[in-house]
Image 1: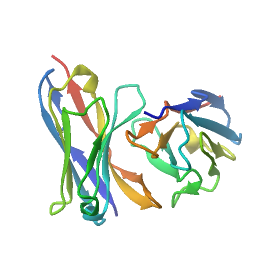
Image 2: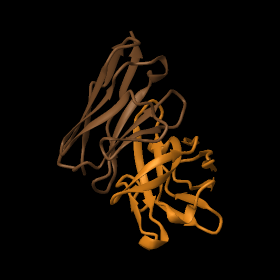
Image 3: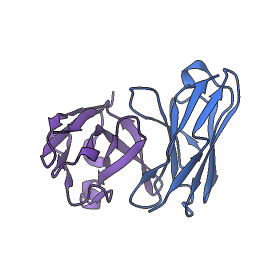
Length: 123
Length: 107
Protein backbone atom coordinates (compact mmCIF):
# COMPACT_ATOMS: atom_id res chain seq x y z
CA UNK A 1 0.00 0.00 0.00
CA UNK A 2 1.29 3.43 -0.92
CA UNK A 3 1.69 5.67 2.13
CA UNK A 4 2.83 9.25 2.57
CA UNK A 5 3.18 10.66 6.08
CA UNK A 6 4.02 14.30 6.63
CA UNK A 7 5.60 15.61 9.82
CA UNK A 8 7.29 18.70 11.19
CA UNK A 9 4.37 21.08 11.29
CA UNK A 10 4.38 23.47 14.23
CA UNK A 11 3.70 26.95 15.51
CA UNK A 12 6.46 29.34 14.43
CA UNK A 13 6.95 33.08 14.69
CA UNK A 14 6.99 35.32 11.62
CA UNK A 15 10.46 35.35 10.12
CA UNK A 16 11.20 31.90 11.46
CA UNK A 17 12.06 28.64 9.73
CA UNK A 18 10.63 25.16 9.68
CA UNK A 19 11.46 21.92 7.92
CA UNK A 20 8.70 19.53 6.88
CA UNK A 21 9.29 15.90 6.05
CA UNK A 22 7.28 13.38 4.08
CA UNK A 23 8.08 9.72 4.71
CA UNK A 24 6.91 7.39 1.99
CA UNK A 25 6.50 3.67 1.45
CA UNK A 26 4.87 1.20 -0.89
CA UNK A 27 6.26 2.50 -4.19
CA UNK A 28 9.56 3.18 -5.94
CA UNK A 29 10.11 6.67 -4.56
CA UNK A 30 13.13 7.44 -6.71
CA UNK A 31 11.13 7.07 -9.92
CA UNK A 32 8.47 9.65 -9.16
CA UNK A 33 8.04 13.39 -9.15
CA UNK A 34 6.91 14.62 -5.74
CA UNK A 35 4.91 17.72 -4.89
CA UNK A 36 3.99 19.93 -1.97
CA UNK A 37 0.54 21.50 -1.91
CA UNK A 38 -0.88 23.67 0.84
CA UNK A 39 -4.30 24.79 2.00
CA UNK A 40 -4.79 27.86 4.15
CA UNK A 41 -7.68 27.74 6.65
CA UNK A 42 -11.06 27.78 4.85
CA UNK A 43 -9.30 28.34 1.51
CA UNK A 44 -8.61 26.35 -1.64
CA UNK A 45 -5.59 24.33 -2.71
CA UNK A 46 -2.32 26.04 -3.63
CA UNK A 47 0.54 24.21 -5.32
CA UNK A 48 3.82 24.98 -3.54
CA UNK A 49 6.39 23.18 -5.63
CA UNK A 50 7.75 20.01 -7.16
CA UNK A 51 10.91 17.95 -7.31
CA UNK A 52 11.43 15.81 -10.34
CA UNK A 53 13.17 12.45 -10.31
CA UNK A 54 16.85 11.70 -10.90
CA UNK A 55 16.05 11.02 -14.56
CA UNK A 56 15.09 14.68 -14.79
CA UNK A 57 18.11 15.84 -12.78
CA UNK A 58 16.08 16.44 -9.62
CA UNK A 59 14.88 19.72 -11.12
CA UNK A 60 12.66 21.75 -8.82
CA UNK A 61 9.81 24.14 -9.62
CA UNK A 62 8.13 26.58 -7.23
CA UNK A 63 5.13 28.82 -6.92
CA UNK A 64 6.01 32.51 -7.07
CA UNK A 65 4.68 33.00 -3.54
CA UNK A 66 7.39 30.77 -2.04
CA UNK A 67 10.26 31.03 -4.51
CA UNK A 68 13.45 32.11 -2.80
CA UNK A 69 12.09 31.25 0.66
CA UNK A 70 11.18 27.57 0.37
CA UNK A 71 13.40 24.73 -0.82
CA UNK A 72 12.24 21.27 -1.80
CA UNK A 73 14.65 18.37 -1.53
CA UNK A 74 14.51 14.61 -1.53
CA UNK A 75 16.56 11.71 -0.26
CA UNK A 76 15.93 8.70 -2.47
CA UNK A 77 17.92 6.47 -0.12
CA UNK A 78 15.42 7.27 2.65
CA UNK A 79 12.31 7.46 0.44
CA UNK A 80 11.72 10.89 1.88
CA UNK A 81 10.73 14.34 0.69
CA UNK A 82 11.47 17.60 2.48
CA UNK A 83 10.31 21.20 2.47
CA UNK A 84 12.63 23.76 4.05
CA UNK A 85 10.65 26.91 4.78
CA UNK A 86 12.50 30.13 5.65
CA UNK A 87 11.35 33.70 6.27
CA UNK A 88 7.91 32.42 7.16
CA UNK A 89 5.01 34.85 6.95
CA UNK A 90 1.53 34.71 8.47
CA UNK A 91 0.13 33.95 5.02
CA UNK A 92 2.13 30.70 4.99
CA UNK A 93 -0.22 29.33 7.66
CA UNK A 94 -1.76 26.22 6.12
CA UNK A 95 -2.02 22.48 6.06
CA UNK A 96 0.86 21.20 3.93
CA UNK A 97 0.34 18.04 1.90
CA UNK A 98 2.93 16.01 0.10
CA UNK A 99 1.78 14.18 -3.00
CA UNK A 100 3.22 11.47 -5.20
CA UNK A 101 2.90 12.06 -8.91
CA UNK A 102 2.42 9.43 -11.58
CA UNK A 103 3.52 9.83 -15.18
CA UNK A 104 0.85 9.74 -17.89
CA UNK A 105 1.98 10.75 -21.34
CA UNK A 106 4.26 13.72 -20.89
CA UNK A 107 2.82 14.97 -17.61
CA UNK A 108 2.81 13.81 -14.00
CA UNK A 109 -0.44 13.86 -12.02
CA UNK A 110 -0.74 13.81 -8.21
CA UNK A 111 -2.30 10.43 -7.58
CA UNK A 112 -1.65 9.83 -3.86
CA UNK A 113 -1.63 12.40 -1.09
CA UNK A 114 -0.60 12.36 2.54
CA UNK A 115 -2.92 13.48 5.33
CA UNK A 116 -1.06 16.75 5.80
CA UNK A 117 0.79 18.58 8.55
CA UNK A 118 -0.25 21.94 9.99
CA UNK A 119 2.00 24.98 9.96
CA UNK A 120 0.90 28.03 11.93
CA UNK A 121 2.86 31.26 11.61
CA UNK A 122 1.93 33.63 14.40
CA UNK A 123 3.50 35.81 17.05
CA UNK B 1 0.42 32.09 -14.90
CA UNK B 2 -2.58 30.11 -16.10
CA UNK B 3 -5.77 30.96 -14.21
CA UNK B 4 -8.50 28.36 -13.75
CA UNK B 5 -12.05 29.54 -13.12
CA UNK B 6 -14.51 27.01 -11.77
CA UNK B 7 -18.25 27.43 -11.89
CA UNK B 8 -20.37 27.30 -9.95
CA UNK B 9 -18.44 27.89 -6.74
CA UNK B 10 -21.30 26.44 -4.74
CA UNK B 11 -23.94 23.89 -5.69
CA UNK B 12 -26.91 22.78 -3.61
CA UNK B 13 -28.30 19.57 -4.99
CA UNK B 14 -29.93 16.24 -4.15
CA UNK B 15 -28.99 12.58 -4.15
CA UNK B 16 -29.60 11.14 -7.60
CA UNK B 17 -29.14 14.46 -9.43
CA UNK B 18 -26.79 14.89 -12.37
CA UNK B 19 -24.09 17.43 -11.56
CA UNK B 20 -21.85 19.31 -13.98
CA UNK B 21 -18.93 21.47 -12.88
CA UNK B 22 -17.05 23.65 -15.36
CA UNK B 23 -13.42 24.68 -15.31
CA UNK B 24 -12.18 27.37 -17.72
CA UNK B 25 -8.52 28.05 -18.34
CA UNK B 26 -7.14 31.50 -19.14
CA UNK B 27 -5.21 29.99 -22.05
CA UNK B 28 -5.16 26.69 -23.87
CA UNK B 29 -3.87 23.79 -21.81
CA UNK B 30 -4.51 20.91 -24.24
CA UNK B 31 -5.79 18.04 -22.08
CA UNK B 32 -3.42 18.62 -19.16
CA UNK B 33 -6.12 18.84 -16.54
CA UNK B 34 -6.95 16.88 -13.40
CA UNK B 35 -9.97 16.84 -11.10
CA UNK B 36 -9.79 16.22 -7.35
CA UNK B 37 -12.40 15.59 -4.69
CA UNK B 38 -11.84 16.80 -1.15
CA UNK B 39 -14.06 15.81 1.74
CA UNK B 40 -13.99 18.01 4.86
CA UNK B 41 -10.79 17.65 6.90
CA UNK B 42 -9.38 15.13 4.44
CA UNK B 43 -6.68 15.14 1.78
CA UNK B 44 -7.68 15.62 -1.86
CA UNK B 45 -8.31 12.53 -3.93
CA UNK B 46 -7.53 12.25 -7.65
CA UNK B 47 -10.66 11.52 -9.70
CA UNK B 48 -9.76 12.31 -13.31
CA UNK B 49 -6.48 13.01 -15.10
CA UNK B 50 -5.60 13.98 -18.65
CA UNK B 51 -9.03 15.65 -18.73
CA UNK B 52 -11.02 12.45 -19.22
CA UNK B 53 -9.18 9.43 -17.82
CA UNK B 54 -10.80 7.93 -14.74
CA UNK B 55 -8.38 7.18 -11.93
CA UNK B 56 -8.34 3.54 -10.82
CA UNK B 57 -10.94 2.83 -8.16
CA UNK B 58 -13.07 5.89 -8.88
CA UNK B 59 -16.74 5.08 -9.56
CA UNK B 60 -17.86 5.27 -13.18
CA UNK B 61 -20.53 7.87 -12.34
CA UNK B 62 -17.65 10.38 -12.51
CA UNK B 63 -16.54 11.53 -15.94
CA UNK B 64 -14.47 14.33 -17.38
CA UNK B 65 -14.40 15.98 -20.77
CA UNK B 66 -12.95 18.93 -22.62
CA UNK B 67 -9.72 20.24 -24.04
CA UNK B 68 -8.14 23.58 -24.73
CA UNK B 69 -9.77 26.07 -22.38
CA UNK B 70 -13.05 24.49 -21.30
CA UNK B 71 -13.49 21.37 -19.22
CA UNK B 72 -16.30 19.68 -17.34
CA UNK B 73 -16.60 17.20 -14.51
CA UNK B 74 -19.89 15.31 -14.50
CA UNK B 75 -21.36 13.15 -11.76
CA UNK B 76 -24.15 11.19 -13.43
CA UNK B 77 -26.14 10.37 -10.27
CA UNK B 78 -24.99 12.03 -7.08
CA UNK B 79 -24.46 9.73 -4.12
CA UNK B 80 -24.32 10.74 -0.43
CA UNK B 81 -20.56 10.25 -0.33
CA UNK B 82 -20.11 12.70 -3.23
CA UNK B 83 -20.96 15.76 -1.17
CA UNK B 84 -17.56 17.41 -1.09
CA UNK B 85 -15.47 20.14 -2.71
CA UNK B 86 -14.10 19.59 -6.20
CA UNK B 87 -11.00 21.22 -7.68
CA UNK B 88 -9.55 21.29 -11.17
CA UNK B 89 -5.79 21.63 -11.70
CA UNK B 90 -3.78 22.41 -14.81
CA UNK B 91 -0.49 20.67 -15.53
CA UNK B 92 0.23 22.40 -18.83
CA UNK B 93 2.92 24.68 -17.44
CA UNK B 94 4.55 25.88 -14.25
CA UNK B 95 3.45 27.13 -11.88
CA UNK B 96 0.81 24.44 -11.60
CA UNK B 97 -2.47 26.02 -10.58
CA UNK B 98 -5.80 24.95 -9.11
CA UNK B 99 -9.26 26.29 -9.66
CA UNK B 100 -11.01 27.95 -6.75
CA UNK B 101 -13.15 24.91 -5.98
CA UNK B 102 -16.81 23.93 -6.21
CA UNK B 103 -18.55 22.93 -3.00
CA UNK B 104 -21.36 20.45 -3.55
CA UNK B 105 -23.84 20.44 -0.68
CA UNK B 106 -27.08 18.63 0.10
CA UNK B 107 -30.21 20.59 -0.75
